[in-house]
Length: 234
Image (cartoon, rainbow, N blue to C red):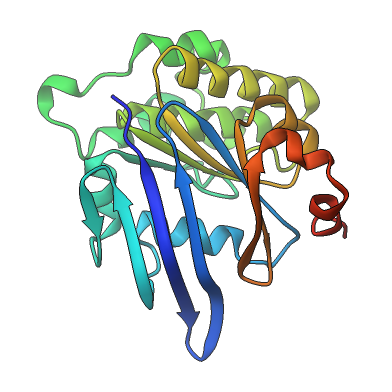
């Protein structure tokens, strides 16, 4: 089920501007890896490189035994990289059921169903299957975005700021869901996050970014080190 994801000294440019400078990180199978840092330091750019939305200038991205060069995003999704974007990006005019079914696109016909465990993790989705996505609260939309990614049967789940603008009770639900996916499904999880308490509670490994570079790598307990917190201060 699980697959390791590793990034080896990648650079990424937007025109003449360099967003990532020699980024290396490893997401071990069956672990939650968090990438932290202030706004604008390259966290989302790292995820866009992994998912293929932006092409890297140099370096390598390895997914299991595959080297991802200019593999387009839809092929990466079919390979097993599930993506939950910042801002959720659900389809507001589609129902919850229809939003979840958009995850079928890359699946063989035999797998085009919504796994029961998604409704066990997020019961509100089952009770609102026929409601339009735009009618859900921000927290419910985040649960829907995660559910949609899980429909694709990912080996690696990549999440960009999953707690942003979410009420505390749903943050707890999302934390429990990610721990379940790690512990019971053996899933490899990579998240970009700014909420330190959330990362301290659920992450196994952390990377801290500043100005497009990795400044620290280590266990989640390192979040309490003064040198680490210095890079996270606004």
